Structure formats: C-alpha cells, structure tokens
View: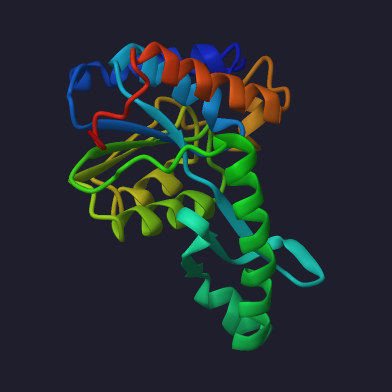
Length: 226
C-alpha cells in the first residue's frame, strides 16, 4: 500500500514532522523542481516560511544518460558535483565533463527563468534552509543541491523528503544537519511506488505554487533580503 495519497498529503506529513521550526524568521524552504515544489509548498505554508526553487541538472554519461557522472546546481549552475567513481570507470575526460556541464548550465538557466521569472534567488546566507523533494532514489541530485547550498553559507540545512531508501538517508545525514524522511520502503522500487497519485508536475503548476507562496507572505518580500 502506498504511504501517501499524493504530493500534497506528503508535504503535510512532513510539515507536521517539522512543526518545531514554524515561525522562525530565518527559515527558508527550497524545493527541487518539479515534483518537490508541491511538497515544499505545503511545508512552507504550514511553517510560515518563504518558498523558492533550487534547480539541479544531472550530467548524464554520454551513451548512458541515466547514469550520472555529476550534477550542477546553484544560481546559474555555478556548482559542479562530480561522481568520481563513474568518471574514473568510464574514462570521461575533463573536457567532456566541462562540455556536458556547459550544455546543462544553459538549460538550468532557462528553467530558472521559466519558473522564477525575474525574481532573484532567495538569500541563503545565515538561514535555516529546508531542502525538499518528492522522494529520493539514489540521492545524487540532493547531494548536488547540498553542495551548492553549503557554498552560500546557510546556518543549517535540513533535508526533508517523504520517501527514500534508508541507506540514502544515512549517507545524506553526513552532509546535512538533519534528514527527515518518514517512509523507507524495503525493497525500494521507485519513488512513485510510495504514492497513490504520482502524476507529472507541470511548469504551470510550479509557477503557480511559487506565486501563491509569495502572495501568502503578505508583501511578498523575502525576510532574508529585507
């Protein structure tokens, strides 16, 4: 039986587990698009925190694009995280890795504009940041997100996901200050198996939820930038 009816319900479950952080003026929720945004929206709404997106792009191994040789994240794709084992075993050159990063960086910038519009990224320095996705399989995308965030100087980083393998959560706990994950199915087949409804989140939904979150904050001003 699926642990969650949909992403909205999963977000509300996580919000309940994170309720001790409600109302903190330094709190920021960052969601990994697209599926993490509906989850993050519920958390941000329940905790009274601003919501923004953190865009991450996988660097797929040429010919085997499903295998990540790294990832890029952060504003403009400035942070590159390399999967050293995949690079070593595949013999990928530094030039090829950089070329792949260049291509994906352009797509990352395009998606940032598509989802955020002209709004600048939320200020991260000195804040308690909750990073949200709708689930993790390998954790590589989240690891890239964490690496990007650490370079921006947050006070602390919490990973909040509805479902993931226990081993992935344990590994991430070495890189985040706290990992909150209420469902660790055994065996872990796929993220979607934890949901009754796991339809694709559209670009329109992402933009709508970000706009609604901004409007619900009153003036729409991020407290971390005022």
